[in-house]
Length: 430
Ligand code: ATP
Ligand code: MG
Image 1: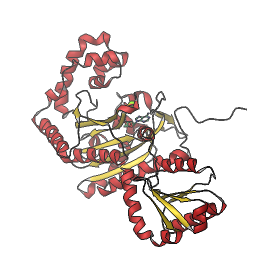
Image 2 (image 1 turned 45 degrees about the horizontal axis):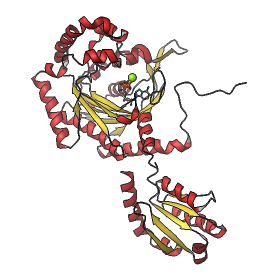
Image 3 (image 1 turned 120 degrees about the vertical axis):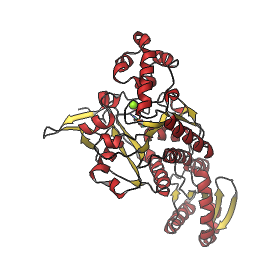
Image 4 (image 1 turned 90 degrees about the horizontal axis):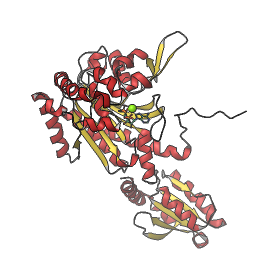
C-alpha cells in the first residue's frame, strides 16, 4: 500500500524551517504593536457570498481559484482566499467601527487558492496582513507602507522595490476605463484569451496580465495617472512626498491596478529581484468602498498582505542564520569539557539566556562551522585545557574577539555580558 502524501500545493513546515516562521511572526508582531495595531483572528471558512461580494466575481481569485464546497447542511462554504473580506465582515458584525476613530488591525494565517503550484505559489499559503480602517488621510496610506518596509528591513531584506500607483476615485476610473477600452479594442485579437474576455468585464485588470504580448500592447496604453481628478492627484502627491520625507524609495508603476470598484487611490506592491516569477512579497492599497459594499457604513480603509512563503524563501536565500535570539553556542570536546559544557548551558539558561549546546562530539572545526551558522551572538569554547582549569573561551561572533574567563567569572559577569549580547544580537538581526 502506498503511503499517503500531503496534497499538491500544500507543504509541511518542518522543524528546521519553523524558526524562520517564528522570526517573521515575532518581528511583525513587535513592529505592529509599537504602532498600536491589534491582532484579530477570523474563521478560516466563510459563506461563499462574502468573497463573491468582497473580492468580486470578475477576479481570478473568485472566478477560478476558490476552494468552494457544499457542507452537510447544503450551504456554500469557501476556504478564505485572503484576509480582508473576513476582517471587514467581522468589523461590521461586531460594530467595531462604532467605537469611533480608526481601527488598526493585523492578522496572520493560512489562505487557500486553487492555483498551479510552483516555488512561492501554493494552494495553502500564509499571509500576514494589516488593515487600517476609518481614515481617508494620506498619512494612513504611508503609515501602512512604512510598516511593511520596516518589517522587511528588520528581517534583513535588501534590494526590495516599492511600486506605487493611484487608481483614483470611482469617477476617475470610469473616465480612464473608457480611454483604455478605446485604446485596446483594435488590439483585441492579439490579446491573450483571458484579457480578451476582460475587455468588457474588467478592462483594468488587463494591465496586470502576465502574458508577454499583452504586456507589450499595454506598454503603449494611456496612463491612469493622467486621468486623476484634482483631489485624487493631490492625495497621490501627498503620499509620494511623505514617502520621500521618510526616505522610502519608490517607483511609479501605472500598470499596477486593481480592477474593482471599491479600490481607490493608492495601490502598491513590494517586489524582490530574487524571487523569479513570483516576485511580489507584499501587495496592498486603499479600499474606501469595501466596507459599504459588504453592508457597513461608508468607511475608508487601507491595508496590505505579505506572502509568508515568499518572504521565507528570501530569508533562506540570504542564508542568514534565523535565530538571532541565540545568545550562546557552546562548542566542547573531550569528556570533562563536554559535561562541563552541559552544566554551563543549564546555568546560563536558568539565568534567562538562550543557549544551544553542540551535542555532536565532532571535531572542533565542524562545531565552529555550525556555531558560525547558528546566528548566536557569542560562542563558548571548552577543550581539555579549559576543562582542567575550569575556564572557558568566549568568542564574539561579529568582531571575532576572543577572551578567556573562568567559568565562575562568566556567571558573575552575566549582567554586563547580557548588555553586550543584546547589542550583538541586535546588529546581527538587522
Ligand atoms: P500574484 O500576482 O503573485 O498571484 P496576487 O495579486 O494574487 O499575487 P494578493 O492577493 O495581493 O496576491 O496577495 C498578497 C500576497 O500574498 C502576494 O503578494 C504574495 O506574496 C502572496 N500570495 C498570493 N497568492 C499566493 C499563493 N498562491 N502562494 C503563495 N503566496 C501567495
Ligand atoms: Mg494571484
